[in-house]
Image (cartoon, rainbow, N blue to C red):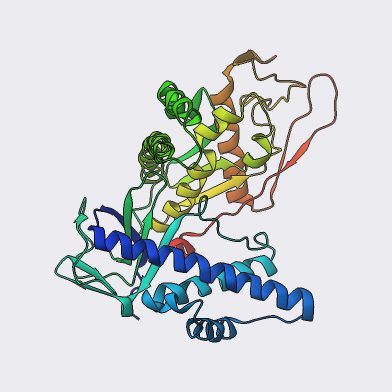
Length: 405
């Protein structure tokens, strides 16, 4: 049986010519138009007639739209990105009916991401040169790293961000991603704000606070944008300037998280984290900006797919587990632990750093789940005579075999 490799996207920046930029801009607009029209048609069919429209029916509607005088411009761009837009809409409805996502929303010209996806029939990749359909010249790509040797992309996604930068993402098999050698080490990870993560080993990794470092520059750019007249060319220039600052912050944050998560996965066989509800935590007006800058959701997402790639185990414990209030030495649970308490002493004499103690408790809970599989870790009663407390632990532990691509 042939080995199955991981599908991996390689993203590069490129610099289109004026003709290529115009063609891609038209394609982005057509993709957005087709997606919105198909969404409206499916919504009306269900609300008025109780009818579900399939992908094939949507594709037939697209063909009919192209034949009308009003929408004939849809034929001027490659048909593949338009068909892919219908497939993405079908996937959105599938996720909605499976209760994995909200009802699909219309794409906005100002707020939605400009992108178009091309399959193998709509591009040519030869000798490191990528040429898209409806274009005579290859894209001028800044190759920051090579694609896997002997591999060609199966799909190509072209996008433009709010700062006006152009990117091309190539999806291809990567034979270099394979399980790493087994290790005996495990680590508990406690996410925070002052320290981005505290590890059960006692190490604390400082939060770079990328947004705070560039806040003064961002404030100046936003103040300049607020002074410009709506619809003017100067306002568009000022908007791009704000977007470039945001892009700089996001790029630095993403780079830091990639390095951190890769290190955690490579150095440990098992990584244990908490199941944090970041969406609810963002409702805290005093901490929402710092929580957003920490980007705990991206941290977890990267750990999840990298653990799958490299044959590691990722254990997630329940969000209500009292990791901060629990003494990792004797198991006693304190009644209260305000956020301003960063170090505390237990009645047993153990002195704890709040974050490191939480990381150690997270690790112990995760290892208990991995060993017992019962999902419950009993806690000792407190000296005051209170009954023992049981905290549920959610164990989405992936086996090594399942994690292999």
